[in-house]
Length: 319
Image 1 (cartoon, helix red, strand yellow):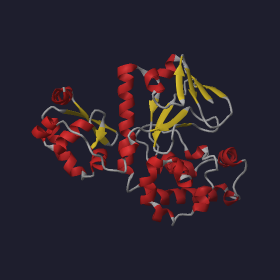
Image 2 (tube, rainbow, N blue to C red):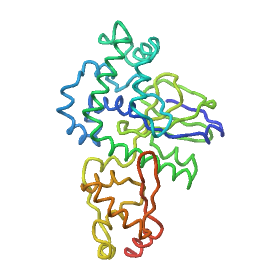
Image 3 (cartoon, one colour):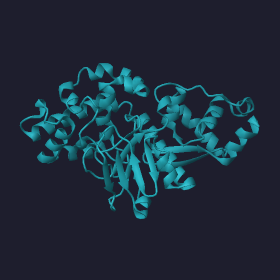
Image 4 (cartoon, rainbow, N blue to C red):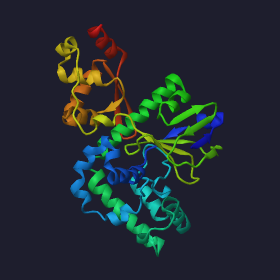
């Protein structure tokens, strides 16, 4: 159990971030034990042949049988716009003592493949993580990032509508916030209590945590939690539309209007409907021009959301 102690100022300073390096490191969980990550079976199937060409002796030594990864693979992101290149540069510069301590924290020792020069070991890790990214992540990152950014947008709406406490309690069944105490139920049996103390708590949505994860050591306050909307990431989605709305707008636009009760990008919507992003964008422009959708930029994506008028149209057709 990990407990973060938050003052009122700490609560007001809670922020979100995205970390490509976190996704790389945590993806090793799904690679090692696919049965525990059913929502990522589509990704595992698509990347199976590419992963056969990677040095799994290096990557496999970054995770143990508990599916723990060293903290140097889970840097605290500074924003939703964090770049992998910057994170890998920081990883390569990890001090020797930190590198070794983080490995010992996972394995109880430094794995044989990383013995000797820490600088050479880090260079091998960066090289294999780069290859993992280029072959298994880069082709799919736009759709992954769209889901992660949509999750952050959803949590932001929760804060605006119901407050930070409600948002925190909705992150996971393993996360409970009450009266300044944020409890994270981890597989680690160690009891830890840590004041946030003005450092700021960062929340990081991820594809590769089933409930909630946190740093093993005494790093900056951070919680990684399972992003919403992963269930449709690798499969096309059939949407039930009100017949009256479909008759007016057409099936494609009615489907989009029905789906956009929560924010989503054109990339995510294209994946869910199994169509091209350009086709989705054409329909979104028409719906927005008609006042049925709103849009706002978040990070690199434009997120769309059904407007009050769009909601009234759907409700009127089903009422």
